[in-house]
Image 1: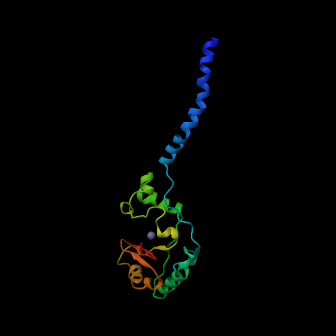
Image 2: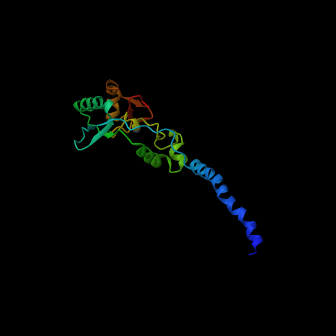
Image 3: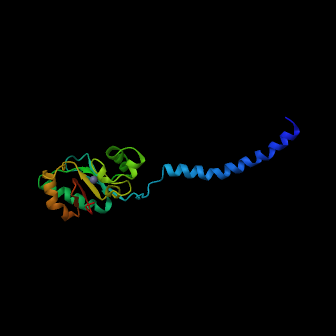
Amino acid sequence: MSRRASAHHRPNRSVRPLLLALALPFVALAATACEPIPVKVIPTPDLAKVTCTTTSTRSITVAASIATHTRQLLAAAKTDGLKLCGGGYRSSEGQIAVRKTNCGTSYYDIYLKPSSECTPPTAIPGTSMHEKGLAIDFEVCQTHDSACYTWLAKHAATYGFKNLPSEPWHWSTTGS
Ligand SMILES: [Zn+2]
């Protein structure tokens, strides 16, 4: 290589780091756009366990704020011959796992698809009452004519629970 050619290349080399520095933010932006962080993240509530009346080895984890009411509801149902257990609090990771099962596994499926398009309907991560510990899915409440649903429809409001009409098993403090 001649001295002249070498001198000619030198300025180009010094420009390269600058171009890289300019491009990096766009590379980072593109990566972020592909996998945005979920819009809402619900802080973990204070939690408490309420022992199931089906078996004392299982419990329902709920927000501490509704533990007493949940315990009273389970006790009252048991007195009437209805033993209950179910699923309460769900972490954000848990909600994402349920979305993958019920809605699909793409980014759209997990974070954007309307709840009503999932089977069964499943709230978008960050919007479920389960993530606040304020909802319970009761296990023997699959239909509106089950003994479980019939009893809860009559008594759950006494303990601050409302049903989501499209899901006989889902009871929460707001009905959503
Ligand atoms: Zn539910």
